[in-house]
Image 1: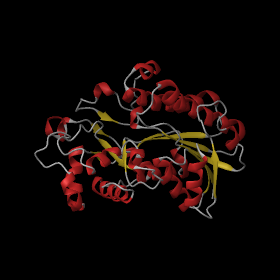
Image 2 (image 1 turned 120 degrees about the vertical axis):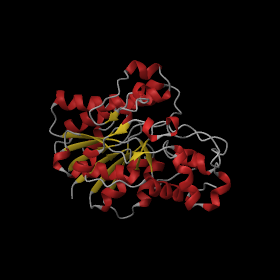
Image 3 (image 1 turned 90 degrees about the vertical axis):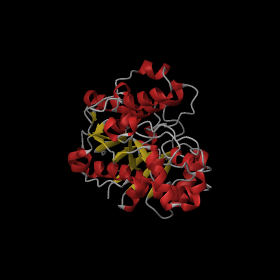
Length: 341
């Protein structure tokens, strides 16, 4: 089976992707920032065809040069990119790691890994959406759309804008690299919205939970008792489908050169509550009752929200999306296992 380089191997999506690649028989080289994270991954897969390499700062010049020189690499899964709102400096903590990290991996692969056939990049719905049109119920989002925010918007805007710019420009530099540098490999990108699903990576505490699953934590520890927060982006996908999309985009020859908008559909934060109440009766005293306001579609109706077109991911990657109910149940089961009470 082909040898795959997976960047950012300790991340939420990457841990599921690593598991799937190993299960399918691939040999995997993965990068992490610290020896502590490297040990956790090595300990989780004793005897696996797995090499863990330290890349402390993906924004540094030539960050991936060493790992790209490992012989025999055929595919690259580039998931390493910051996704959090705890930063203090937009340029050095969010924009540079996303944009320069993508450029660095592509340059290193072109220079040192001529056997690589395809690079698959974890992008985001953030690179598709236009925030000014999120209130437009007649809008249908697809791979044809691009977020219009600029680098300057990312430097000066609020955290959500900075994140969207980081994902948009990281993806655009990849497509530009393919067009201008004409490397031997082709590129595919995976563009998910909110990513729910069970946690398989090590968590020191629930404070370390990935951003999307943070909503679930807030719900089950009682923070929604008096008001359900706004949903934000009303689209979700389960992390296991995102991982599968990455592997299918790697293994299907026709997937090269494509973006894939990977979403299971629409949801609201309010939709999460009855699912949790049904499956986790022990959490009843933490949950908001039906009279608690918030968390619904605009005007209380799904007819008032934008549409989506995920047909390309179904047709070309063979995805059969996990339902919201299963995703929520499996997510909360895993959160309870790491200490949510």
